[in-house]
Amino acid sequence: MISRPLDLLSGRLKLRHLVLVTAIAEQGSVLRAAEHLHLAQPAVTRGLREVEQILGVELFTRGPRGVTPTLFGEAFIDHARAVQAELRRAGERIAGLADGEAGTVTVGTLLAATNVLLPRSIAALKADRPGITVIVREGTFDSLVPRLVDGDTDLILGRLNPIEDRTGLRQMPLYNEPVLLVARAGHPAEQVRALSGLLGYPWILPLEQTSLRQELEQVFHKEGLPLPDDRVECTSMLTIRSLLLETDMIAALPALFVRTDTRLAELPVPLPSVRRSVGVTLPAGRALTPAGKAMLTHLQQQAERLQPELPTRR
Image (cartoon, rainbow, N blue to C red; front, side, top):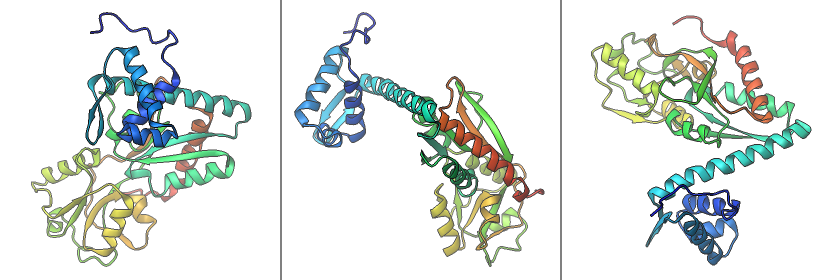
């Protein structure tokens, strides 16, 4: 039983302990963690035992198929990841300050920025500073925010989600882009002008936890219509495009995705109530690394150059 706050700065807890614990959590077993870290299994087991003795609690529950973090383990793992992320950022910042040409930037990306803005920005960044490594993580806003908060991701790019109930975040709008209903060129519904006329076709909808899905549900509700029964739920742009081209499916996609793909066509059913703002979500209390600042600069520049390509109506 822990009766007083733990002093984890006494020198007993080492950085290697943090690495071991996070590796065990990510790999799901001591053996796989040892293989991942290129260490002998007894060394990893011994290191875990040392951490648990320092903390006075068990961090993992052992089972026949591996290990599962306990309540204490989940809490400690969150902090261990944050410490490691901050140390990586410190190293990148020192390197960036030293030569301005190296470092790593991790971008979390949402649907709205995947096919045009982000690729153009990465290409411009790499042409300017080829020594910077860019890591792209695709996901939903809810899945990417924890990585942004703990420092594992530098920024999130995509349609701006409400952040009023999320502390420690700030947002930077880049441009407004309509969301359109899309199908393959030559789709039999190309002349349909009412949402009700599209319910007979299969649909691709965003996942339930996305803001776009919530806004589309509101559109259907306002029209007094149910969501399509025949549907796929997906946020992978590659999968969505393939399904659109090979079937009669319909999807709601950013306008630039349609305007840059001649095999896709916009359907003449407007979605005026769907939010249009695309931008960057950043941690409010943490400065970007030099590599992160360079990425943000190129995002802003490419967003400005995209303005003439954006539709002015709808």
